[in-house]
Length: 90
Image (cartoon, rainbow, N blue to C red; front, side, top):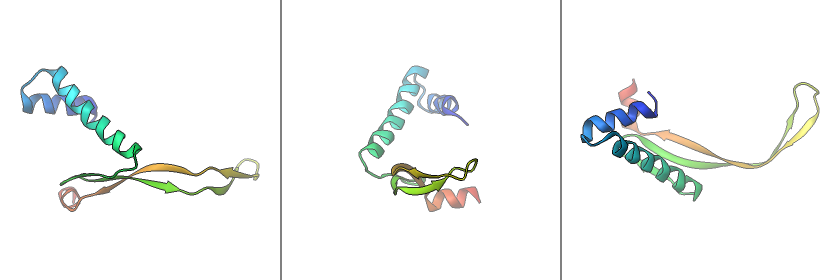
């Protein structure tokens, strides 16, 4: 399933135009991304929790040359599924 499939499902449920359904899906995705950028958690009941995690800087190794390289610190998105989602997938 991709974004277009989700838009089609929302369109079928709401009975509005596809453009309205696409705006609804875009707004939801943009809201999640904006909250994660601000460092906030996004909790959706029955689905799970979107959060950010800080990865510290570390030393890595270039596999081709064996040279030690510095890998900078970064933030990454993380998802923890809700119990209802875990049980539904089983």
